[in-house]
Image (cartoon, rainbow over the protein chains, first blue to last red):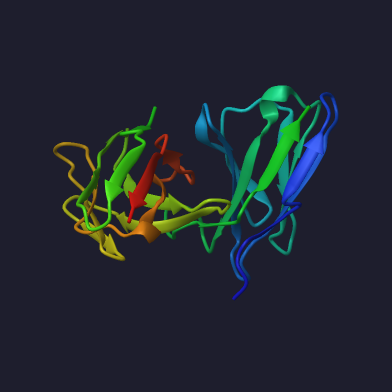
Length: 114
Length: 112
């Protein structure tokens, strides 16, 4: 079974631009979560989707948004990029969600904002 | 809110040494507890988990016991190998929250 696939692997953007990151979950998994990883703040929860519905959202500004498609693939978008948005963005999938099954993480998208 | 505190390290050990990484938590509900491991350049992998008090999670020689009375979930391994070098994260998931709350991570380096 293929794992969680995140594209692109690396991204360099300029302040003020917007960016879209993509995540393809493991086949059959309906829950997709996104996390931001930085050296200073560690791993922080962004949001979680299940069957195209956002079930939970972390404490991030509205510039961070996401969506999930009917095939469970997910995208997250960051608008008006700031230097502090430089991070590793990790996507994770599971069959039903965090409470009932462990998360399977992708290798992440490394975003650098200059 | 929920939180996880773990020793940040870095931790450097010789091969075959005993490993303990401390983890304590604060949660409003009755959480599930996890240890994840991250190898360089990769995402996180679930190492072990425990869902109720006194449960012991184990995998690849690593163990951790869910201690409700001390709100702890310390990771242990009796004899580490060079291949165990990685960053280890303790995490919790409170019931109904659909999210993981992570500790800051502990970098482990094992020297031959």
